[in-house]
Length: 317
Image (cartoon, rainbow, N blue to C red; front, side, top):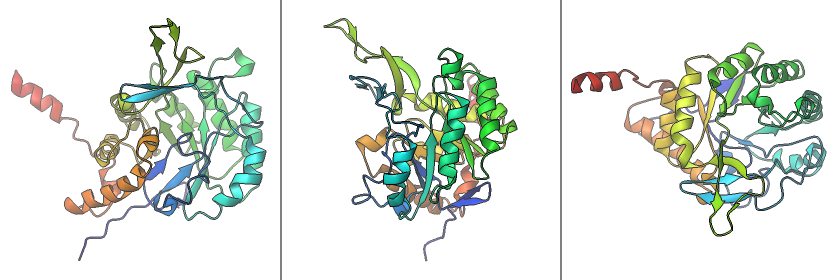
């Protein structure tokens, strides 16, 4: 008889069926793929970012393929929260998996208004807050690059919901753990990391940038080592769950994130390459646990033996 493996985990009392999610912006709103994808096998779907009003995003070109990844400058293009509620959410309510709404905004008031509109609807179990947005009231600086503003956003949103509140952090700061501590202190239930890394690409024939905005966000396998290091840093600083994101392309990658301290993982850019990868990882994690006589995937979380590198170094000296 095949060994049973416990796959679920809880955030703020809400239980997710497993620890594998699809990342915001890489799975649309979730409704487009329902005919060809077994969404019920996922721990949850995180929607494309939702703003108060529809956004066209940045002008093209706004995606560029890179070595082991991609650059994007989509500019948070979306249909707006009201259209989402009217046209997308009714379909998502029929899915046998958890729906997490990702929220993006240009001011604290806008973050609050979007959340309040969603809060009055059925079908959303949690919120992921994208703080890598330009703060129009502060000259365009991203909230995610300002620790005090990130904490303030968290504080205001916490007052408005009893649902799990997940803050998605940018790696484009000096010490991401400081931001993680700040949002945890203000009531965040979890953090997602990392968001994309700033990068650029140049066309040597035209001598022009390949993106209309010159720089964009780098994602995909190229950023996995950075993401792992950030997860490890944050896991040592806070006790709330971490969603690990960044270049996950296999079950082995997902296990690395869990060992580094992530409680769950999100599959992002690789959804474009291998649409069923997240389902394969769900199955792969269970298989790994059975092969290693592990009865609960949660036992992998933070189980890294960080002293091994020092031991190897000592053997060389």
